[in-house]
Image (cartoon, rainbow, N blue to C red; front, top):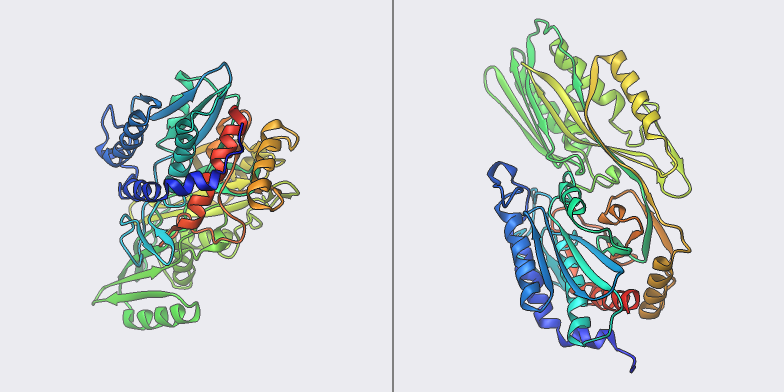
Length: 469
């Protein structure tokens, strides 16, 4: 067979690939369970995105299937073995501070800017076009190729659970949802809340009425707000808050009247797998407030937050720090902070741990700390680490393809993020982020370079063909 120039095949479809990616990104596919339905359990936006991709696949001749709105797939080829391409169409909330419409998918300076452009709707469309190219070239395959489409990856992975209750496990596959060259190891991910036990509220001139920051466990909060009530020189507090903002190069404001003061602080969002890449608005605001004489319950909450988490994303203060040579450091992201005078406070934590770490032991240590300081660990969920042997045929094939197309060494990488690859018995994450590119997933002005979108499509096309031929 004549050697295929995958880049030329992508170039032939360039304009339509860009347009379809933009149309896909314009769908606001953010989790909305409150307005869900039996056929659209995660809300209308996610359902619209799922239908968009499945209908496009049907029109292009793929076999399509919708599994009750929880997931879907597109399939081509024949054979007993199944190659899985695991993608997801849900995105995290857009957050604040964008320079353009987060769902406008505008292209500026070669960047396609939109929530989901990098994670994971842009790469999903690249993988879709990779399959489309193979199908249109009528290339012979000895295995089936199936794009598995998730809808709840950014939250609880209920889509994966539902999907694999009804469908077969692929022999091997990849998720276009992280970095090139090849991610062969992923940290374990545990989400849980630390909830303050009941406290007797002491009488104080100044009381914390409410404190709120963060939307998701796996995002560094970019906004925090606190409301205080009582007597005292509230304007002086506002002045001190401004000095605190200036000292830490932060934006925010304080507003006060006779007996109320409200503080608002803007941080910098980032993916929860590396909290130090952002500025946690909730932790900054807590560290400012804990220096004041507040009621006992509020003081207890803020002291706990600052003592165990401010300036420490590695679990040192909790006594759970750990690192290994495969996946690096254990990290903790404080993704949600909440407090009310009536109910006390809570923290929502996203803990990512190395493949050799004993998470049962880590959880026990945190529970022991909580018992000492009047908190309780609840709502615990855990996704175990994932690791594929470097000599597996999947990795060997992907390494060969990457090196052939880029001329660069296909090194093996480990990450703190969790991709759909871990839902496969033999799965790795494969792109779309090329070495040296900024990782702007979950951040404002998230983007993918059009050049990289096209380049990734060519790599995926050859990889899928080599795995399934």
